[in-house]
Length: 549
Image (tube, rainbow, N blue to C red; front, side, top):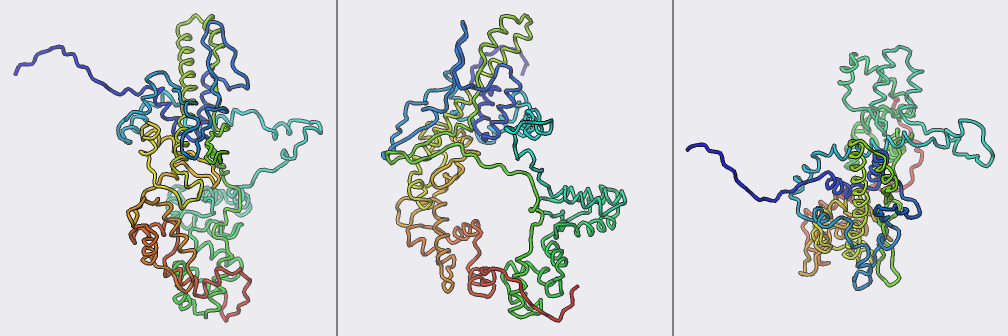
């Protein structure tokens, strides 16, 4: 067959992921903290972006005025009555993107793996830093706080602030480092000790295997073990242990209570977890009264001594959506305006620059800045509208949960919500990721309301998996000590209530809620251990003819 050259025309459709489209999709799944960090980065990078003021931006002659997204009015809330009809239909439903652009978010973009692979490609052109890095850089560039202002000089009584004199919280690493400087004088031992302190976690534990530490430091294993033995004498007692047994043993030695019987108990904590009191009593060589006192003494120890000191600050969860009872008996869904970034495009600045710039490179730069700023404002507006639309549909679908509680939680999946609001499942999945809803029954992640369905025994409406777990917990909490419910008994009672469920499913739900088996629950409620664990711990006065180790 001869090889020839020829021209052919082919018409085909392909999906083109522009940087702006990838940015809009990425913004949907960001939490409010990550979104704030990203917007702060864009404000620093783009000179045409500015924070929204209280008043509207004045129009520029000859330039189209940019509308200010107002999240505090009708666009940020939605309500529906008892009949389920949307009372806010038509408000905030107009598209924030140009015609044809919103379809890119709602169309089927392929499998989840293909979407994620597409999103992770070429994002360097859009995101130059991770959100955590952007937040750290924003914190460094932030103006000096009240602590710095007070340290600079005198101030009047009106500016007096007691918070300026609050000392920094002492961390566990700093506390151990102070003791390290006193405990060792040799530089080599101090270097080994500082390296080991850096390995201590927030609970106060060292890694179980320190072989790599000796290899990296170029020291012998004996030298490392000698430093570890000194570190374990530091305050708080039990710190720098490599496991729970060693942590408890260090604290018992500090109290001079580490005798042979207590040593046997500490070395067999697995039997204590299994509530095998008979085996523990035999190993320790004590009677029932002594084993009860020993267990009570173990309970007074601190299994995580490092948590007494300051650690990384935990960020409080801030809800993205508020759900409140409406005056007509329905529910009012409202966006949290504090979590919505307010940014505007400075058209005045761009108009002035366009009259003075002469270089082609500068013109191209500011044109790109204007395009990116305009798209970001629209993407933020579309993100807020989409979150409100999804949250409103979730509240409508789970009306029984908000009215009567978790027992009335209905089975719900992404497809049901996506079909109701005419969006794609991937869009709903991104919207519900890392978003929280504050309700009259507590704060929940949006994904909490999506649960699997369990068939009904009488052929009626299916039950939610979360509601079934709640039912199982109620049955176990109400059982009598003389009539512990087995998994088979729970299955029979659930089927009598109209829930068709298998025994292995009950066991899986029970283990997920960290509820022990019927055998362990019977031991807890009927043995002397159950009384020891439920009663307040008192200082035992036990005397045994055993010498402390």
